[in-house]
Length: 480
Ligand SMILES: Cc1ncc(COP(=O)(O)O)c(C=O)c1O
Image (cartoon, rainbow, N blue to C red):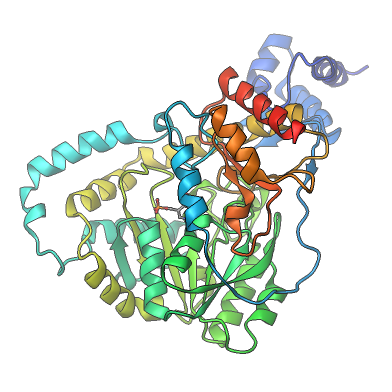
């Protein structure tokens, strides 16, 4: 046997015996080379051998990890058929589930929020006190006149330019969150009773926005690895019945898919030709871990895939985002680049909430301009990707074998399909008694689809307690 084969063989045995478990990271190449007195290239050859056997996987900027045993993947819909638009009436159930998920001591698989220790609250506190002290006039500005702080607008433009996206200063409106940004866009381009096309499944808060505004939802089939079906979107938008599209092309919630650049280009062109405004939620653009987002020729080294906005030269796309998942969910700071409808969005911002807090804007501008911010994002992506792998592994070990699961390319939630006949609203009621939070699948569809699915958020560092919670949840599911 050659040296690299010996090493590969040793690791195969350790993995087969369960001494290194799925989701665990192997020692670094340099460490292994030193420990085994081998050259780096021999170690790499051994790791590539293990990778080609499907035993380990390389994760960008992170190292080599043991792969799961391969639970089956959630299948996308095999047709491009679109059912008629429906009214949305989820809020009663949704508010109850969200409230229960927030109660004290719940295992945190409910809201998609990174654990506080992964975010930047201490840095924010320091910046807040310095900026409030040194710029006391920030709070004396008019309440409706100056929506934007120039410093933040410039910082956003610089950041987006790094991944090939040219925002224009006169189209940016700083908002109180991504949710507010989407709400303002919807108000700017729809009237009560209109139809809005959404991915299926889609983020429940988007559905709640439609419900609150009396808008109908048109569900477009969306594949867990390739994203929204462009063919179905084309069919659905043929007859002028769709007033707007509300999509999450980078790291959709709950599927975690990232649309290809070709599909993004096609969607931008289709909607611009038909003059159907696209409201694009790019909240998870900064936390994409897909192979695609790291290899696409058009993507920057920092891993942010290009949004549809960057393929649209017509101004038809309204790009919305915030820093809730990367800096702090309590910051409540987002923005919209409104394209050719920026004036209408600004009008909505002015009449709905006036300015966005000027101190917060300056705090964020300093933070995202600081040298450590990209390092923070890299580290956050690595940690979230590890947490996803650990949670997947726990589901594989503890859930019934017929379960299917996603392999998300962006964001940090897992979408899990249970055998038909299980209603995860019932599972949730039982899980709450066991102090386990998650979001039932039916809340991701306005027409009652996905009742046998559930979403697990992976925002918290892995621990024996979380493993135990997944085990208990698997037992509840197994008994249903
Ligand atoms: C896709 C998506 N958009 C928007 C939001 C909410 O963002 P914000 O806190 O900025 O309102 C979330 C939060 O989970 C989300 O998953």
